[in-house]
Image 1 (cartoon, each protein chain N blue to C red):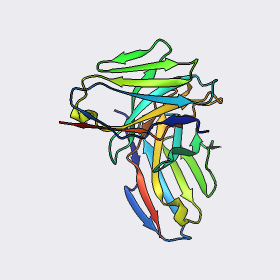
Image 2: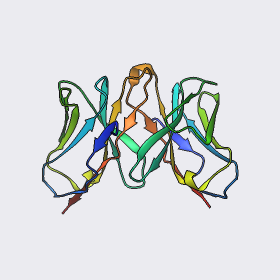
Image 3: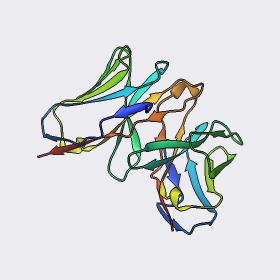
Length: 111
Length: 114
């Protein structure tokens, strides 16, 4: 079983739609969770951290469910510029800030 | 603004050649990382370093070595390149133990081994 699993998509949505991605992780000792964004042919960049209490940043909301070991990302009012691959990232708490990256979920927002 | 630069965007090498990939960060970060990214496999950690002259193996260190002689520079070395090392190589840095999760990536080097 992969440490971090994501649906690769693509998710095709029209502008203005709400879209949600989930990600599951296998190590119950994992402590820190993040969403990164990667544009086509570009490097990954941190989008937001995921806290136990949830985290909201504008149109983006991240949630953590420790009992079921999944993380979610909700994007409201999708923009064309949201088209990218979203990487779920977990710190498995193995003694150093090693991160485990999911393979990503691709989002395509169309006019 | 944090900047991580990599020596080449595209590189083509022949099987058996020794290959050096250079990474430089300008924000005095303690930690530096080398990943490779392949379709369907995501980013996989090759090596990382948390201090000058220190290095730790990641998940896929075979066929690679690293060097960190100065804090700002982290080099990845392919001792004898093979075709299965064709990939996108990404370098990253991060400030320290408190800032788990925010890694700053360079633009990547797309290496092709023929």
